[in-house]
Length: 158
Image (cartoon, rainbow, N blue to C red; front, side, top):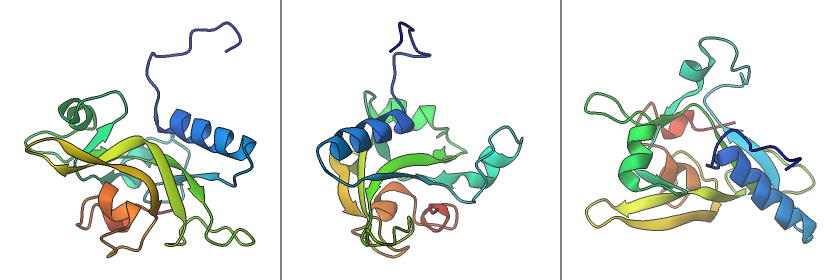
């Protein structure tokens, strides 16, 4: 904007969350922005913050990428799971008077990723309009995004 070229031709989760929340709120909506990550630490200048905050992922498809490109760019290999060190999402509070990001009833509107429902044929489903969900809520957003192990959904909070 201001005549600059930006840092990339790509958009990331922060860009997508800001676009969705801004446009929705301009039209009278009530979306906030939050980060899913394992700890409260957001100082990524500290050397161990990325490692401390990461959570492992299910197979997903990022905006503008193939499933394979998405997973390899997120660290997936034969000996490593794909992960996010944080993921920024727009959300609608279940209780607008007392918004609390970790409320499992909050609605997430993620325009950045799609959940892969069938890896063989590449079928995906939208990650928008889902409740955040509890650790064991198979219909919740967190359950669709993060793997169902100790490194995944239980660390996908905040």
